[in-house]
Image (cartoon, rainbow, N blue to C red; front, top):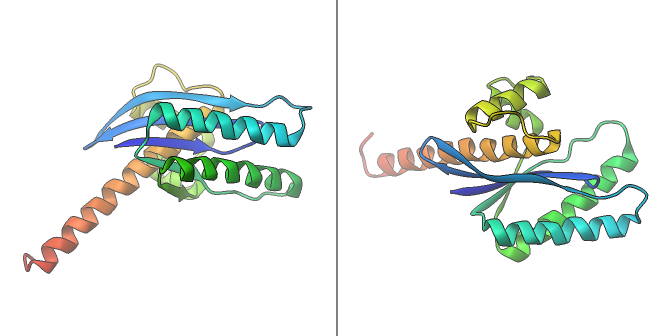
Length: 173
């Protein structure tokens, strides 16, 4: 399974492509879409959309995993990030790629084994799981890879649940 992980934003959108088979991970690529500050916001959204379409076209993922919007205190920022998420989700829909959303808590728990793990702990576990020499930069890229890992773990758990359900239906349990 090929998973495109996304850490959404409008200044920087982190992305990472991970191939997952069984319990093995292989990094297929990662990077960031960066938009210049002091640029009209609609132009920034256009760049995010066009670059995301190009990434989807090149990577050909089976699924996109994206972090849910996390609201802190800055209303202006959260609205801008929500709009950027919108164009990212549109690009995935147009490419026919199913989208799965995960909260920061789910991502931390899946990657680091602890829902209150620090950002550095999650990034280090991401590096270890993907057998990378160093944590990818910018941080948004490492975060996107963590989202992809989270989906791989969640998908595997769902597959296991489906297998148990089928066996129960067949009378094995």
